[in-house]
Length: 227
Image (cartoon, rainbow, N blue to C red; front, side, top):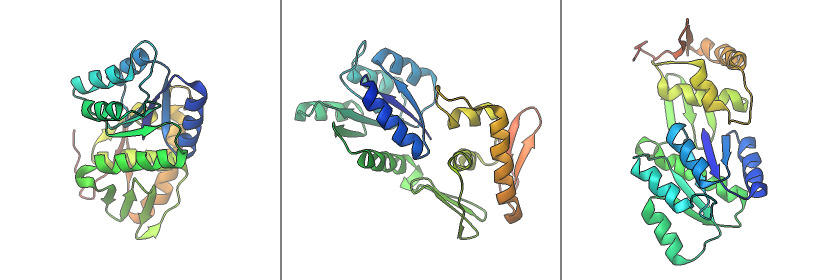
C-alpha cells in the first residue's frame, strides 16, 4: 500500500512518514503542490494525505486537478484550516475525509484504514484465495483458518499479488508497491520475499510461479491466466 504525504512542514511529515512506515505502508513525501501534482499524475498511489496551505500550488488546486484527471484514489485532507467553509469546500472538491491539525497519529492511521475499506469492492477488505484469506484493513492473513504471521515486506508482497491472481506481474511493479523514493530495495530483495512466501504457502497448495523474463504469477485455484 503506497501513500503520498503532501506537507510543507518537514518535521510533521517526517513524524507521519515514520509512523506509517512502521505500520507497513510505503510512503512518499512531496513538499509543495507542484511536486505533488506531478507525482500524482505520473505515479501510482493508493491514498494521498493532503495539506491545503502549500507553496507553489495550493492543496485545493492539487485536489481539483486530481479529480479533473479522473483519478479516484482516496484523499484525506490534513490541515490547520478549521473553518466550516474550508471543510465544506474540501469535501465538495472531492476529498474523502478532512482532519484538523494537530491529530493523533493513531487516529490518522484509523482514518486511513477506513478509507481503504471504503475503497474496496463492496466495502469488503477481505480477499480469499483457496485456503488463503487476507484482511487488508486488519493487516492479518489466515491459511487454512490458522493465523499466518508475516513480516511487513512479505505481507505487502502478498497484498499486492492477491488482487492480481492469474496475472503476470513484474519485479519492478512489486518493487514500486513496496518502497518509497527515498528507500532502496533491489530486485534481489523481491526474489527473497517471493522465496519466503513460497516456503510458507506452497505446502497448502498456494503457488507463486516464476515466468522467465516477465515476472511472477500467483496461480488462481483453477490455474486460469489473464493477460
